[in-house]
Structures are given as C-alpha cells and as structure tokens.
Length: 308
Ligand SMILES: [Zn+2]
Image (cartoon, rainbow, N blue to C red; front, side, top):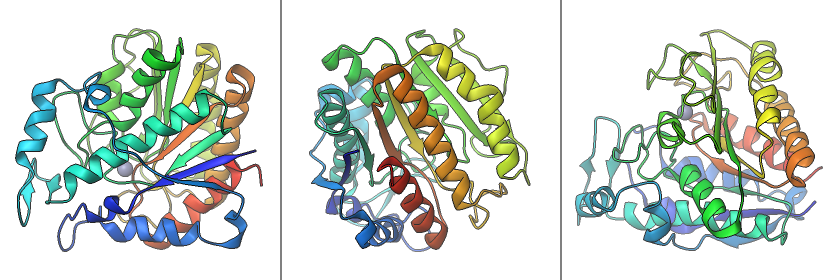
C-alpha cells in the first residue's frame, strides 16, 4: 500500500494563545511520531493552498470573506468563545483544507492508495456559515464536494470517530442523499448535536456513546450502526474525520479508547473502502488533546493505513 502523508509548516503558525487545547504542539507531537523509522515507507508531501472556489462549494463567499476579514494583523481575535485566530490562521486554514483536496486528487487518480492529512486547524465543527469549535473551514465536506465535482465520484462518505459530533459536516450533508455522514461521539458533550434521530434524508448515521464507554462500546457502535449504514451506502470514496480525543487519556471527554481501538476502526474502514471503491480512503486529523495519546494513536492509525 502507498500511503500519502501531507502536512505543512504553516499549520504551526495558527496561534491559539496560551492554554488553548488546540495548539501547535499537537501537530509537533504527530509529526514527531510519524518521523520514526517505521514510517519510512510513507510518501510525504507538502499541502498546497486550497482554492477559494473549492471552499465555496460548502461555505458561502460571504462567510469566507468574513473569516479573512477577522484575521488580525497581530495578537488574537475570537470568532466565538472557543475559536480564535491569529495572523497565521488564514494560511494555516488554506493549507489544512488544501491538504485534503490534494489527498483526494492523489487517491482518486490512483497515484496513492490512501492518505493522512496531519494539519490544523481542524474542520468538522465548521458549519457552512459559522466558525465554531476551533474550526474555520470544514475540510472534509469541502473535499467530499470536490471529489464529486472534479473526479466524478457519485457517492462520498465521511466517517467521524472524533469524540465530538461533527455538526458542521452533518449540516453540510443534511439534505443530500449522495453524501453520507456517520459518527461515533460522546453525548452529552459539545456541540450538543448527534442524536440517533438526526438522520437527514436517511444519509446521516449517528451512534452516540455515553461518558465512560470503552472500546467494546465503541466497536459495538461501529459494528451495529455505522459500518452497516456505510456498507449500504456503497461509497466511491471514504473520508475519515480522524480525531483521537476519545482516547482514555484525553482531557476533553470521558470515552476510554486505547490505541488498538483506533487500529481496529481504521482496519474496518479500509475493508469497507476496499469492498466498494478499491480502497480509496483519505483521513484527516481533527481533535486529540493529550499529546502522548495523540502521538501514539495517530501513529497506529497511519501504520494501519500503510497495511503494516
Ligand atoms: Zn473532538
């Protein structure tokens, strides 16, 4: 298997200030883990900037211009209580979204088998017209619409195992039967969406977990709900919102996953992608706030993508 790893140093320049959990050290932890010799077989690349035209398939032009206008010349500016931007945030956001677009290009044309985008800011909380939850542009939703518009994909799935519900992705996909969103996440927890009865036009599959749930509960939610729905959808491309904040050690939630659980779900998603789309899968870093758990969990995820 050829796995592409995309990142960009500009993603370190999105400065969220002292004490913010979504910090540049997260990316340094992931980069450090993926520098080990086990990962010598990765194809490595730098993320290009996303075209605004691609972003505007999901986000109205007025929203994109608002984000750009809110970037401060110095210090910080808050778009909501959690979502902060600094002078480097615009470039970081363009590179983070550009990574996923480039990964989709490379996977859809068969240059690589699959890809992991080690980038920030994350994206899955960004709604079409609203920044929130540390997120500016919804990279996975932008990438899904890009796969359809540019590569002729008929059905694109996003599967999200971040511990928070991807309200932004759900909102972007809500009434489009050819886009699938499946998610496990803790409830109750930020952002408050993700109940089982939020089903869109039958294309949304939420499998909430309770505080204290462990790997058996997580695997059961995938086996019983998300994977059968994904299989029935028969995607031409699987995009993964890979957040590692459901780890036992994560400070922002109370789910108790361990590294083998992330390997397991990665393997299951690869199997489904293999069945329907020749294995086409693009994974994107979302959350994960304990640096050690983030490093080890993203490493086992990428190792599984490599088939190692
Ligand atoms: Zn999260």
